[in-house]
Image (cartoon, rainbow, N blue to C red; front, top):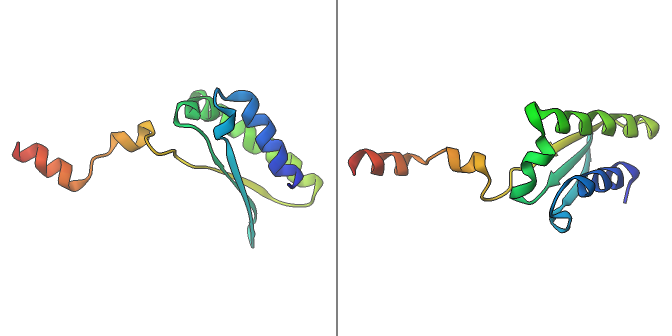
Length: 101
């Protein structure tokens, strides 16, 4: 495991209630390194933080870790299945059913 990915897993597992559900993937493209983070749906608030401050801090620290290896590191946080955001939006069929019913 690369140092940037190991750092992300270590930091996130220290923050969440379900460390066993933390998953990271690392891909490299022309833009640099992309770390994708997936956590338990109950832990999303802890990872995002108030006004996104925790996620912003993680991204800043990852950039610093990446500088040591001369890489640009970006972080993408996946929305877990059953997350609050997913429940806010209804499909077109659900909206039509609500209007008809």
